[in-house]
Length: 100
Image (cartoon, rainbow, N blue to C red):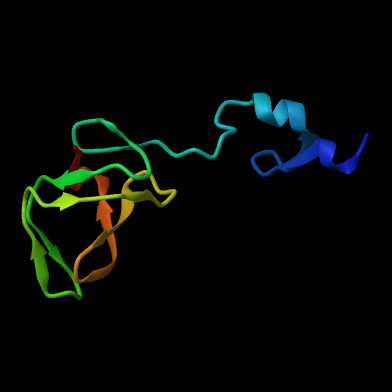
């Protein structure tokens, strides 16, 4: 067998075969991100804010109903990365948005 047929399982601290690792539940790295009403979010979705949010460091408030286009998932189940005019590096919590 080749060396790439085994992967290191950090949960158990042992080397296991790739087939066994793929069959385990939770083996995929996909993080499920849901909005405030439970809709599943994906990269490129458009979302609307459900409440007024004060943006720290920007001196700006985003009003309820503001449309945010083309979101990106960050790998965290509660954070989404997005762009908005005048605000660089905006990260929103999924609990404050609703999928459009």
